[in-house]
Length: 210
Length: 210
Image (cartoon, rainbow over all chains, first blue to last red; front, side):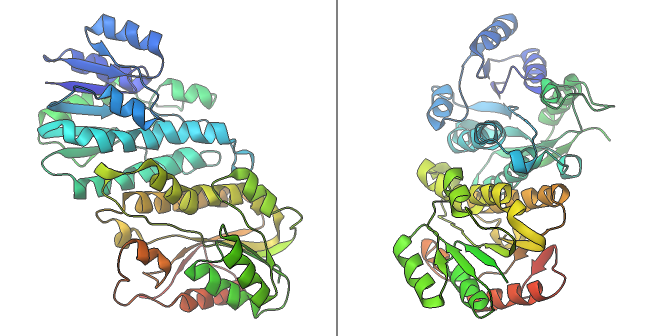
């Protein structure tokens, strides 16, 4: 299995990296924080490909030479909550680059690098959990991602695109919010669900947990 | 009635400008194309406020001195369709600035300038009509707008936010696509629906046509 994990140093990304590293086949990991990425890649025997997902050029560069990928996981994400009245352009951009535009460039440059039957997993969010005060950019960017995935499915041939819809997951994203929600899943549970989905026919929407 | 129309030189925006100009009270019009904007404003006895909606500073500048607004209409929009595999960053940015980020800055800076009971209208799109090949960025940005409007409603106090959901409308947007869809509404029908909605209690979602 040839696997690429983007956003590999985050909670879900790192858990997915560990889960897929336990399979046979080469593993590529990408993230913005070079040091954390290289430490993780070394630990898992994977290749590190640092990239800032806000730049199309970074995303196309991280894919260089990668062909016939079986699985791509896009697990980058940022919440940076704030009321609309205080929306800060730099934070807005950070949320959108992580949650949407990085995935857009990965769809553009990555879908054609999947092997026939290959599958891309995009980490979405459940509307009912994120349509709350302060989360306008998080909720909007995840809604955009879901819609782009729908159109991508209409345009792509011979490959699958899965929108992953976990409940709250215990990751660093909540450090931006101040507290982890009660009952948040361990990232490993999400990673395991990805692996299980990938071993079957693959679903269009992968709902995890309750 | 104190009214501001943003994206006022487009098909729906210009029709809304004409419709609201027929009411009493001052009218402000904003758009990027200064010449067309000034011609329209002169014709309608309105004040022209040119702005490029991709820049937060332009949006906050266009609102300078405007207070106690009764009605704000955000009618800017761009489709620029393209397959994801050929997504061009400049066109992607143009679509997102017109359909989403301009509205975001208007929500940030404009909601507080509405009079109590004031209302902001945001031009959305029906998911079932726009989730089609080539329209990934249009569909995604309109999905994002709808979600941001939902969160804005939770955050705003004493003002209304209406997501307008017309069917296809006969505007220049279709020039980007190549043809106007059969049965497309005249922009004046949308403008009339806005005016009617504004004369009543105002709806959260304003579905127009079939």
